[in-house]
Length: 147
Length: 147
DNA sequence: CTGAGTGCAAACGCTTTGCAGACAG
DNA sequence: CTGTCTGCAAAGCGTTTGCACTCAG
Image (tube, rainbow over all chains, first blue to last red; front, side, top):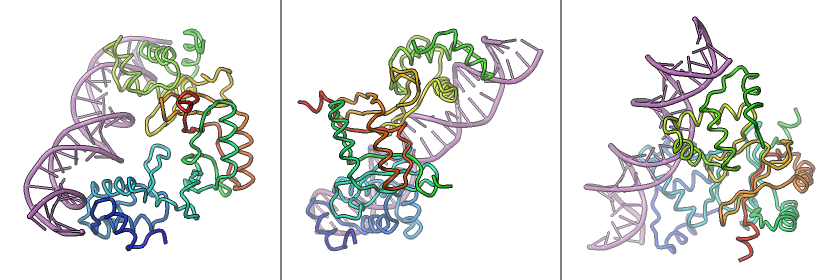
């Protein structure tokens, strides 16, 4: 599990903020939906179960968790997408490359390797220190490319 | 020069559309501002000289030129950015990689090379056919990284 | 002439904000 | 208790759209 209700309270409190049921619900839902969720989708789900929770609360919560480093945001194709930070299998928040399929729309993560070499090349050729950790690449996934 | 008034008329007419002064002005302005212009910036400039030209006209013109392949759009950091297609020195519309500096905000182009190898790697490792031609990479440029 | 293109103004979707009340600590 | 957080409603932002009029062809 990415978070237990336990650590969560600790982390939130340590930051001098409060842990409200809304925040728990929002984080839990995001967690259970699996990475790469639209605000719209997340809100729909949250609001479906707890109609009292407002859209603005979702935005504020995502923002809040973002600052705590529990949730990371990405802009893909003009749409804001959120995911639990460290959803990349390994616990380290190192690699975070998004492979966005233009065909089916699915988003995958890719491990570092090639990216590092790639970044090194850019560094050498352009003196450009690429922030490879938040790279989004569009293309076609194996399935969509195959047929 | 990327376009002469002459070809422009030809290209536009060939597509079965009309070449209006507004469109010329908008394209010229975009051209003269150099790549990577915000709609806001472009409109401001255009409207500064020709107050009668409306925002919606700018949007429509950009869209129109986009379909003609004369202008290309990119979404960088949530902001829509436009540029004259083929602004990459060479006339071919091949390489179109954006190196966005998180420090100074400037956007550079980078030639293909490394990207191709990189794409091949992704293909092999993930079966993911990366559309490397529209890749945007964030990082720090030589200047911002240096100091 | 005629339809593509324009300006205007209004609608749009997504996100943010101001405020009074609610509740975690 | 106190200050953070919530819900509500309204505003904001960049973009799109419907309309009657205009003008390039």
